[in-house]
Length: 588
Ligand code: ADP
Image 1: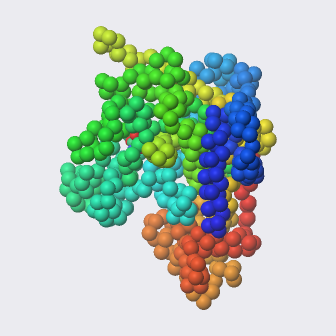
Image 2: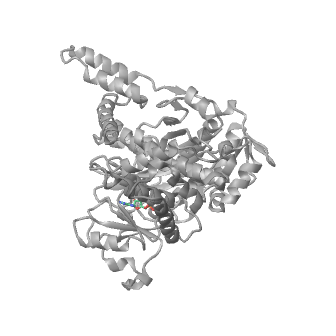
């Protein structure tokens, strides 16, 4: 099984090589078979081909236009329902005015725009929306709650890393507090040159973040006692060798659109933001670690610095603004000699991997919320990715934002010191593209998107990066687990009780002399008691399957790995007929 992963990883590496060649051409990311073909043609290039011919070929590639379908938003008379909307209206209204899109009333319209407040509310709320607004395309995936806190994202990434360590290595090692306190203290005391950053679980726009200089920092008033621990914090390895722009640390905010979970379809927007610090970066020392203007790239913090530079009107060109467009930042990086196409490709690959990891969990949540109507759930979601690049050009996913800011105003100060609020042309430009084009794509069915757009191609500003095909066979495992969990739950949706769980033991392939029927009861009870919930949720179920796999196969197989064992158990379990079997298929 690992072979698949490694070959996929090699393909990615080879693709890096290929992309170097395609410099500036913005060509598509090929699908697997195309990718193999392209890698082959790259390797087969005859060494003795006349040099000028090779140059000509490269030149041709450079002038090749990217594959794109262009849709004029005005040509699609959309109607937007804002009846449950409480925030983000300025940008939506701007987009509606620009395209002469109408406002829909009652339960009517093409798109139901949900603001972040709605997502915070109970699951039932989203469910009611879906039932009432059955024909509308809803602008939030209900399960996206899963990626709105750092703790939940961390737990999913930790799981993926446990199963696929060579793939899920782009999320810095993270400890949740108070659960991982002892593990963290052990690692911290090794003093192996790693620095750590502590962040509140829920995004606070930079407030409350600090770099850990001593263990006492993690406790309120410095009292090293578990009852004083700063709860709901995560501690993360600090990426201490960031790539710099104009000597300053920066990160990218990129926008990813998910339009379907099964089949998984996702896009990345060609535009985004680069957010810079306002003081030159220096390696961490005890005297500079509290300097937020040097270490934290948050706009909300840096806008208060006297060094903050507002973007110029021609913000797509190279400039010195503290907030820049992705395009402008890439131009500066290119000028610095950075291999920008390679970097861009790596960023996309990292995002693809992240999405494959998170999607089964989102799918499971969506199923829980919409229950028997889940296949009719018609939703899409724009996610903000915060990506830090290190000096080896490795992208690190630092944070995911299920409700990326759609703010388009900024505060500017007159020379006489008076502050005023005005529209930020840069934010309006980027965020308009992000939302307007998301609407245009989301109203198409998954099938239409796959047929009309296709992987690696653009529809306006969005490039399709996942077209419903899992590129890495093994990553199917988590989808299969969701299927199994769903089949076992039957009509109880997301509440797996002991009786239903123990049906697994009816399968002769899943019992042996080391694991008998009564062990299933014990495994269930142990995990259920720990979770303090009446039934097992999906993560609890996963733990139970791991325990079964371990007991069933560990002592038998010499080449035992958890991933292999769980795959075996899940495949066996899915082969057996289940009661209330409801295969998870396309959403619309
Ligand atoms: P929030 O959005 O809640 O303020 P983030 O996780 O985005 O929290 O962190 C804020 C900023 O801190 C980031 O934009 C980045 O500049 C810096 N930062 C966060 N985590 C790391 C890390 N692991 N390594 C280096 N810098 C980090």
